[in-house]
Image (cartoon, rainbow, N blue to C red):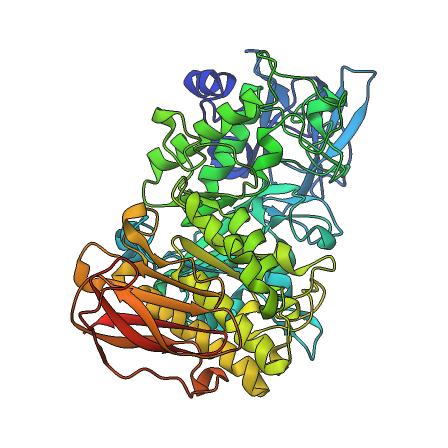
Length: 635
């Protein structure tokens, strides 16, 4: 048998933290670490497998022979197997061969802490380290300002495999190519942040990355780990933040993954009612197990620490919060108080957010949470879950439903739009038009719009304009920014050729300008999560399907007056009440010619009249274009 030299990176304190679920940097200890021991070069391996009878490292350095390099089990009942293997080094390919105490079951597993994985469909781990030199010092110093809750936060959601393809060679763009193409595009479009659908290693393309097997490795589909760092670095050098999708809710049953790891339910909950996800045919983490909690929180910290991510968007939070999620009666067991809340998952999320914000106070965690669970984005010390923001799924659902209606019927559904303001400030809401809204027969966003071509594009521009002036931050999925007409297909590139047509070019120009408006006007971001930042002027004119409201910043001179006309009938000389006298100038109009609008309804500088209207002392008469929005500011 080849030699495995006893060695450990774990101190007694590490072990105590690990066992108590409080070790948040396990990636510094577990996995494979290249080192020199007593003058000998090799690699230290450590894996958690408490039900194992024996653990061997098998790989290309020992011809995949079991038993050739057997790890040593620690004496402290931590369940950790470890050891130093001379000669194994950077690029060595390996797995753990585990023989279990349970019926001598044997499993062959990828390393849960591997920093690099083989390109799927291959499934082994690769010994790796990199000495990437970061050049984003300026961004890291000032990112607290960019990521603050009172800063503009406009997110472009991207699936790296389908954003753009190398058509001639029929392949993905690499991290290195994306560091040019994607970064330049996002900068040109004036988005403040990019959100990447999961880039951690995953075996199955149709899962879009939401079924992870390599939690600590950027997928090898697009290149090496250091090349992914280059992409992050380039975004930062151009003042663009990066949010990573993170999936602590479930994991796939693939043979090389975390499931049944050491012949026992190690990472997953052993009770099927809590450990198996019927919708996704996947396994659910055991949030009550301290070592699993440490694994997940260490993983969240890892991407912020090692890859300089500016935040995590946490997937499928609702599925974690509720024991009866997607389950019929009898398929779930109530908690100790007889309720449906998953108390262990709730405790895990609070702890994860506390750990993240303690180490990285200048990032954001964002919950994709679709229920009315209270205080998701409130601090843990007052009983909240501790997220920075929460996706506003209710707004998304109601708004898309409203805009799908023929304008003639909209007067009967004005409440669908105004309702969001009754709960808009209960959480720090992000308004999402995400990938989930353009798949599975739902059509593209443009595809939902009614009317002839001109009306469909006008509707789309109005929807986006309304979204950007509604309180909260916002997120748009790739392709939506130029009116992609087909549903999203993860197997092919976006339809960039559409930009040769005026209507699509117009939508793209509109998004560019909306991002500029959002970044430039303090009224749109300074109080975006506060009721003080919004005031209705009129939400009752359902007959004309017109909404008028004020967005406010810290200084009244920054106030914006917004008017939306949800019908194709222009509203000329439309009377609006305003609180202050003065002159108002038009600072945005969604009907401009450059957006493929009519260009016929521009407002000159308006001076207020001393005529009371809509319970206000002054008023102005304005033109609101058909299916259009105009924004005014005091001159």
